[in-house]
Amino acid sequence: MKTPEQILEANGFVDAKSLDRQALISAFLSEMEKGLRGEKSSLMMIPTYVKADGKIPEGSSAAVLDAGGTNFRGAVVSIPPAISEKRNQPMPGTKGEVDEEAFSDAFAEEVKRVLPLAKSKKIGWCFSYPAEATPELDARLDHWAKNIKAPAIVGQYVGKELLKRLGGGEIAIVNDTVATLLTAKATEGDRTYSSYIGFILGTGTNAAYVEKNANITKLSGLDGAGSMIINAESGAFDKISQSAFDKAMDAKTGNPGEHIFEKMIAGAYLGGIGLEILKIAAREKLFSRAAADRISGLASLETMDFDNFTAGFRKEGRANILDEIFANPEDAGIARRLSLPVFERAAALTAIHLAAFVIKSGEGADASAPVAINADGSTWYKTRAIPFAETVRKELDEMLVRRRNIHYAITPQVDDSPMVGAAIAAML
Image (cartoon, rainbow, N blue to C red; front, side, top):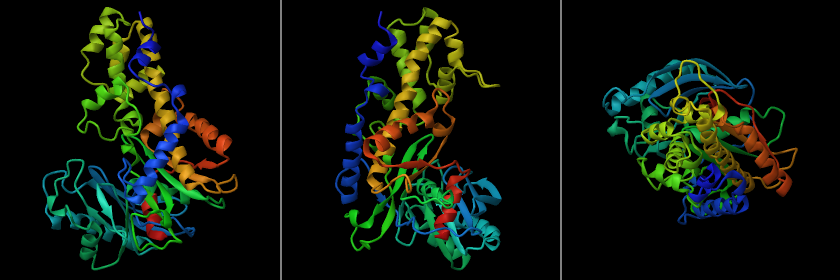
């Protein structure tokens, strides 16, 4: 009978200690460069026209909208980070189809409520649907996600339509990853950062960083001395080998063959990878007959349950199907030997991913002026199977500080990062 480790290896699963870190960092950097030149690349490297320059005056405040799911929020955000007047309401188009007027009026009414309470007259909007950024910091909606039904808005500049209903004004629209990057500035205080990275690892993943305009050769007419934030859409990176488990899980998603990297580290997928591993182990007779039969018949597995089981954690009020299936301690021990490497690999790949962005933006980043990384998302903060963030830090210390003498700093957690970052976009 094969061991759990042999099952993983036989199916092409490269565990954390066996990953070729330098080769993957090089592949990330190569894809980034190609994307900046407008060449074929798995990374879109989207120019946002948003700068990260300048200090935010303490006591500043801005009216903010945050829309990216089935709800949207309005609030007033002040610096140091504090949120007041926050209100949550359904996103227009979630309760049935809405026309252009109903959609934009809902946001206009919320701005009218909070704008008089803010010192800045420029509105910040975190708009996290697929959209093209413009030099005016508007966003042209490409298509809806989250089953929003507002077809009249597709193709429109959402900021321009909002300002029409407000009788004018100024707006700065950013997506959630760019907003997360800008939130790092709110933690700066008296410290100096050489550059900034925004990183989200929750249901999905993405990263944004600051790039010199001179390197963004797919755009013409830029100020070569300036810089802007690039939205990498880094979850789409595909220069990495999938195991048989990854491929089987991927084939069951709605977009097979796409967002390969995201599907190896993000919360929407880790449970699915785990289920494929456990099913193959059952076929290889690693479990008792009763456990094998039950796991083989399981249609899906949520990452929360997979994570809690691997950690040996029982969430009060939540039954975990894996605790029931692997009630036999011997079965449970084997299952955990198969499961833990999924989380360890995700942490190592996360560190490789972040290391590439720090290297790309970290020229001259020493201990006195490190590259700031603001990380956000449930997988980053809530994974229990391993100390996720601490594991990533140890990897980054080795890959960046000891190997390259490039310094970084993971900034303190800021609640409601997308709202804070959108406010900073309005203030800068």
